[in-house]
Length: 231
Image (cartoon, rainbow, N blue to C red; front, side):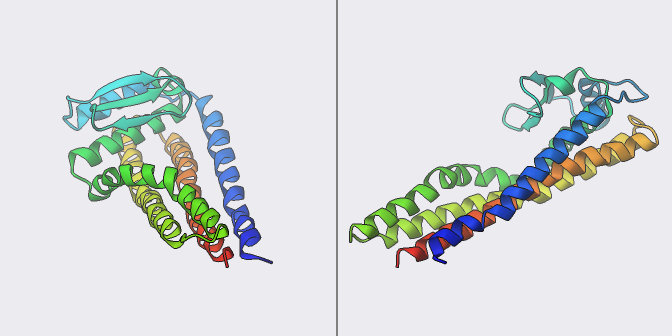
């Protein structure tokens, strides 16, 4: 079997893991988005309570369109919660809102992995857009009998930035979830078994980042194999 065809087969495990991770987060989120928390706090109220508890008053809590589009924007100093989280008093809403506040605490405390990830964003964006394209251009030039190794090597180097971003994302997300679970337990936002449910929601979300990183590594291997196929 040639390197070219093997390069596509090698993506299958990553695609399967991505599919499984997406089904896990959707299923777990849907399940616990239907279960109201005993305290009855909305996602927005959870976020505001955590920020106030930590003495953080320069970060706003805002709604954002879409489903599971929740994120913390450090440049705007805003926790943005999706429509299903912002006004919901479900266990899932509390877990997700607390997770985003975990990112706020990382930002305030200068968490090194978060700063490193932020510095890699331009590199990752460039690498994801140009990396594979340059490898394909290099292969085309190779078929034309033209010098191609420069394009291929630059493409692979750029894609390494994408891999680095995905790998650095893992400790950032796991740490934010750890902070979130500790806070909602200490503050009594969730009670008893509700904390276990929140852990399930955040663990399911974490698998999407693991799957993305794994798939990215397989894509890098694919590019290396494709570069070998020009022989």
